[in-house]
Length: 222
Length: 222
DNA sequence: ACGCAAGTGTAACAAATGTTACATTCTAAT
DNA sequence: ATTAGAATGTAACATTTGTTACACTTGCGT
Image (cartoon, rainbow over all chains, first blue to last red; front, side, top):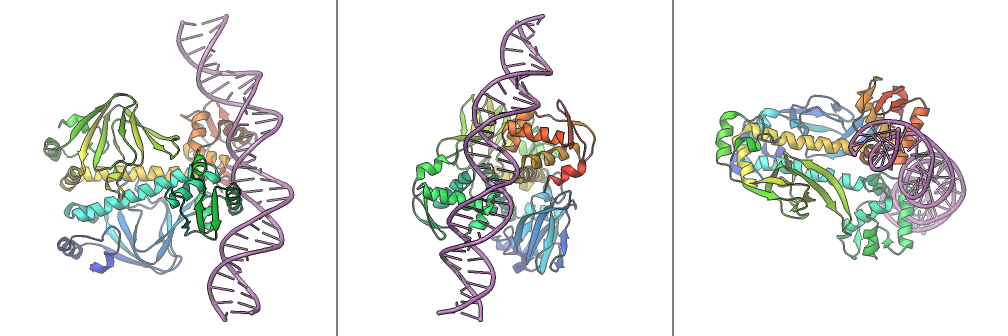
């Protein structure tokens, strides 16, 4: 096992050097390679090993009963795939994963992951931290989606970006991407934005935003 | 440290007896007691120890900037509080936690948790499994909330309850509770239900439901 | 039996959002 | 500088959902 293959992975970086050499050397794992559109993981498949995406990118999607698919997210290397489900009571993949381009994946058996955690505190901490960060991500997504109005979601998002100040800031997303993040239609989002501008809540110039009325923005969170 | 105090906790049960005796004996931890309405954890507070709720129940809520609060959930003993955030990069509590009645909480330092995991594979597995189950719960909530129409949410929920069969089944929730779960208004939910009955999709008698047309129900998930 | 509270069904109207379509502006490649 | 394509602004209309109000049923305790 080569060090460089894993050291950029969020759960394998920053390991203590001494330990790293030893446990990477005798790590039992296998490599798998896929081409674009190959099916990597099928929904319902048993999850008894950790899949680490080391090269390429994949698409992870839920498949509804009727065959319609809803894209969940695009994952880029390096990142582990569904590291939480490896230890869940219902340890089956909840999603289909397909290759978006040429993909390399390292498959590490659950027993090896257990051993690595028992022998290397840094690795254990990384693994736990990664799952914890994932939980925080899901929690904040849930919080955002549970806001019902578009203006409310915008207020939540913009206040977060502005860090509760009235200083100008630049968004990395365009309207379409914002609409997708909020699960709303693009024209509806544009309408809400222009109303908020008309009402003097915010100022927009291209992708540079500025909150003009912090009070009223916070009122939208109700 | 008494065995019984923790053995009903989801992350401490089913431990190997030999190990359990030893590591519970010299576990460094402290006990805290609260009365109804006491503030147990404040949002933003550093999270450097695991809080295990061993007796009583608590309310965990997000506090918005403007002071309006949105209830997140009620937690009943025995359960750890936010075990994921202990290891996250931003290890601050995202919620306020207040006592709903008389509460006993065991506080275990992060270092102790680390030690327990390193020395006891069962404990580590429990901890990981608990976090993984939590992730699955959040994922399914997210999936449900990302369905936009009320009928779609109902179809998703009822198909899940019916396990994709046309057999009758009984719900444990009334309309108001369902509406809250879906984050919609109660009369709107009732309207959707009665339309689905009129359209011959389902049959309702009190809390007993039955899916009459599986095909059309699945079409609603689009 | 009675009364009360919770749960449910439903209607009229208001508000929010989606849909579609098109004009305008911006951006980047040539 | 020109131009194609992306991004944005906006309007008209359809659809969905929320709001409010009230009647009706159900279950339960007195």
